Amino acid sequence: MKTRIMQCPYEEEVTRNIQSGDIKPHIRAHVESCPLCGDLLPVYRFLDRFQQVAGETGISGKVLPSADALWQAAFPIGLFPARRADKKLEARVLRPIILFERFAFGVYLAFACLLTLFLLANAQKIKHFIQQAPGLSMFDKFLGYLVKPVSQSLPLPLLPVVLICLSLFILLVIFDSRSQKRLSPRSKNSF
Amino acid sequence: MLRDAKESFSRFYQQYSRPLWLYIIKICGDESLADDIFQDTFVKFLKAVPGQLNEYQQKAYLYKIATHLIIDLKRKIKRLKQESLEEHHSGGVDATDPLAAIDLDKLFRLLEPKARTLLWLAYIEGYSHREIQEITGIKEKAVKVYLFRAKKKFAAILNQPGSPWRKHENQDNAMSL
Image (cartoon, rainbow over all chains, first blue to last red; front, side, top):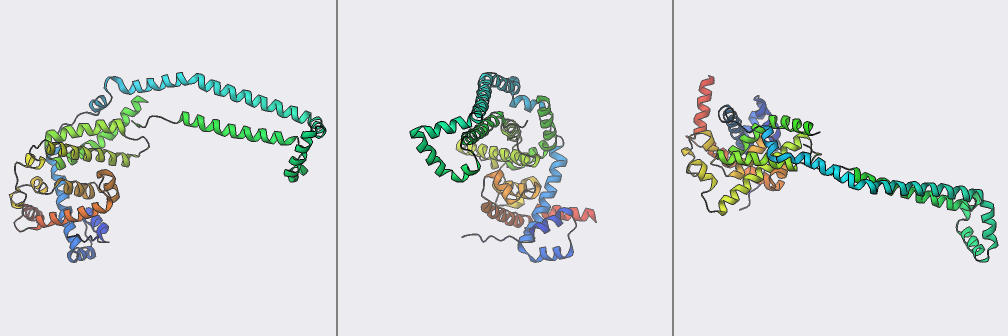
């Protein structure tokens, strides 16, 4: 037979009243009429008394192991400091990789800046060269057609600059997310 | 950092060790087993507690470990075909006769361990059904069912004419008068 589950909407209020020891008249009336809360009252009173008695008798005289002893049991022979040593070792091993990554990023940044300056300084020459070259002039026309709205406000040589900036931004985002991942705490233990 | 972690644990232990021991002893029954479970609970807790939990969640996590250790232990005992933990502790209290239980402890042990666990977590520790699900692994809906049954059964035991609890309450009332 399936048990019909009933949960009295007043249960929380009844519990609060019993906990406080001051049962209001309307709650008392409800407890007397509601079979669920009627069950709750003796059970709660018993548990409260039970906990009180257990606290007075059993637990007060009980000698529990010290926090230090449990700490030692959890991390024997300095396991916890060893974990830290592992982390230090990990950081030492990863240092060359991190340094190289930073160096590569710096080189890329410097090269991108130089290229940008070069393109800006030689914008006219490049445009002239593109228009002169037979294959490239087609490409120029095609590109011009594609980016006509942009090219009206932006000189064509600036496009590579925009592309470089965009790739730089993407690289920066990737680099940042990777370093975030590396710096995130590996240990999940708070103690 | 190590000292901070140790001090933080000491404070946590100071606050929750005794309520936890009380919970374990009242659910599992046997004192020596309770001691083992208590120690194992804290060792496991120290090794595995996730760092992002607040104190309340850490307490729930502690109870979760303890509850699972009690369940594991009972399974092991069952598998070894030893005496059930219930009989082992209660000295053969006849669960069908509540009047045989002469004190509150024995009266509480007339309930199954699962019912005891749920009643303890709900009405002593004050956990919600959802939190009990987290601690015990029993689904929220099932928690409601079991709790309802446990409450009903235990209330019937307590309210039975001649029940030790009734005598106990009558004594208390007489003393207060």
